[in-house]
Length: 451
Ligand code: SF4
Figure 1 (cartoon, protein in one colour):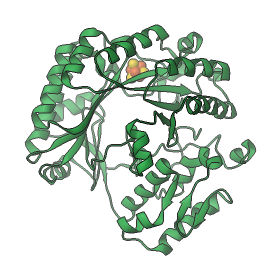
Figure 2 (spheres, rainbow, N blue to C red):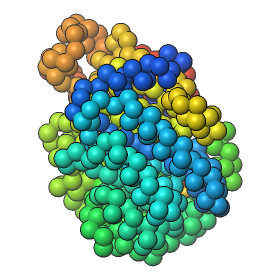
Figure 3 (tube, helix red, strand yellow):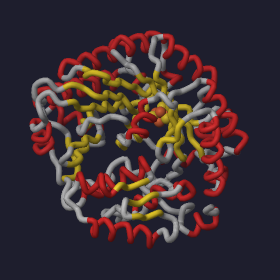
Figure 4 (spheres, rainbow, N blue to C red):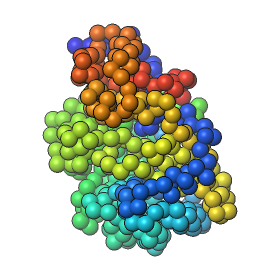
């Protein structure tokens, strides 16, 4: 059994480690990729292939203090309506480039707050998307729903548009914690939103909850998780709150001295984790839980679980295209990211061009290392046979990488001719172990805490 002092000596409690939703991670993107190359990647898709789309809505009615998302507060619909026109123009640009017969595997609206769109705007946006690419068989259309910013008319519009998975943010149900993080959202409001979602036949419900918040204790964590379990979500993401007030200025409103220590964070994470497992959820990777019949659980069992910018996914499409300011697209050739500032993004689209500001073209061992890291983050194991089947690499090259990881985490990893395995007691270190396969790991700063 690995002890807290061993975890501490390996740097778990002070390490700043990427979440590895991509490899290389976004801070390592450069101006390698521009609108021209991005357009070529789209045109080069196989006719009739399945792709996924992410649509970013960077507006909120309120700006919660804990949230590090890049989003603009707005009380009026004017900026949102103007942005919607930009999105529709960007979708049309994409449609001009897409080969015949492309369908959607996954469609996700995230933000910000996608549900601040009016019902008419929602249907307008969905219509523009389905005009260029209809939903394919077994496609999923998911939307991030703010329980404070939703009503029957908007849910009706989303249901009519084909939404079949809803995602609600919870953070924590405790009043004092909610006041301290600047996000008031009562249990009743959240439960009513979940009830309204299910009343429209939308059976798949995701929820996010945070550990590591100010004033959070094991008792408060237990109470919040039990309330969340009463809503019976199909999937739960249990994320550690990342306190980075030097990057996210709003977090300066949160008292640092009320935050749990790294050791307490580990206990809070473990408290919530146990409750989800007791309630019958399967553990998915480092921070998700899913009902046994959920797609993520099935993907885990069949060895097809993947990682993308939203976390874990069972999406098998090779291409994810990001629409909207700051969105990131992924192709087998690399990554492309839209301009982050809404104004810059809008100007490019109005000029008839994609707004790609940066990206990365895979080269050398990038694709191999991306898969090694994804395999660790999803399955806690690297299967040598699978890797050698997919990549032009040798046993000795993999052995050398495994030896390097073993040197960084002596005695903790199980390494055999078949591969590398992270045993359960070492899994709090998974992001750090994955980092030992990261050839771009330059800064070791600016990421969230490893626990
Ligand atoms: S938590 Fe949601 S509503 Fe609050 S600022 Fe972040 S994106 Fe906006």
